[in-house]
Length: 601
Image (cartoon, rainbow, N blue to C red):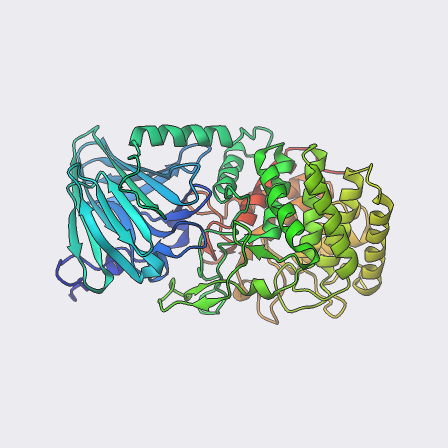
């Protein structure tokens, strides 16, 4: 039998061997609004960026970098875990040969912009527990190792980590080991009797932490519990309150104090093995932000709606008709796409930044108007947002006939969805703001766009086609009628839903569009956003039973922690793409709220 690779000097198994990447189904997610972490089944935090979502990673073994933070039982075990209700407080749970061990873990919530506090409480729930703790932080995707590590008289470790500062309490008995080229790491062995627990608190910040007040674990846990309880609503008026609350918690955890919500917590997780579709989604897409706001509006009047309106409104005030498709969560520009010298997640490769910063996407103006209209219906549209709505209308008037990259971020074309969703937004905002001086102008512009698109993008069999020069159906074309552009009995609405379900769905899984002549499932995974949109379209048609079938099929396409990625491989029953994907959680929440009401007739 071959020996496992070992790191120099310590004899410890290399972390890439001891903690290899897992199927995305097996990861849990921690978040505090300013950054997020993935936790694997062996208690390994393998992904965490600091200080913010788009910063360099300090734990990056998920994509082949160095650095992780593991709390793992010694000996054989069977892993499991669950979220505490209505929160992103995760309980890793292992059945071992000696009993049951749990690790309660969370990013202290709500988070600070310049400092993270990561809480882990190890407990011997039944029987004794033997646990190995490995803390190996290494900044900027594994290129800047730990340095200047010191332990004070109280057993508190401090160190530098690139330009960041680190402090670790609860690891006073840890051994600091040199591991060759990847810098130093801490190892700690815990032996707990039944009922005992041990707290670990890791802080990483942009300022020196040695003189700052030490966080008290019990107080931090209590503060985090209360904050989640106060933040996540009951959502009892949905068809699946528990899952709706989890999706709301995910959306809240991904939303910064600046109002921006990242599209996903990770980068470079492949949508399809070895096909190059690996992207960095740690930025705030305007469209995704609007989807989340509309979902929250559908489920009631909640603060996340205000955050979406604030962020989108601010971007419109700053950039007007040159609104970008995506920003950093604090409103900055998305950096250019580049690769790192890392192996990447298996089947993919390492990529940060995003080429979306070079695109024009017309539909974001229509989505912004739909968001503002939803806020107006809840009497949440203030004067600044109303002025932002004027700006979005003016941008549509000036640019609606330009080619754009569209919802799926493809080559520039006169995408039908982009124009129709702008018309839907114009009609919704005109209806929601009856006292607006330009209401007639807005509805007139919507009529003009609709008439032009009807003349150029309706197939001979009556369905909307992707663009004037592409006759195929597309999942995106289901959205404008759902958003109020056309009534359920409009022939184009019915023909589009029929053409879509006949050509782009399988067994109540939905796909975006057809990639050449390949079978749907060979080209890409089922697109979970599209499955929930189809449920909304069926509900719009008054077919409640069919809507629930679509909802339940796609609701089940999640991981063990209830998280959704962008795509679902139906053959292997595996998640594909970055995790968690905010717009899937948003559409799941909206569908759960919408299906609780009688379908339209």
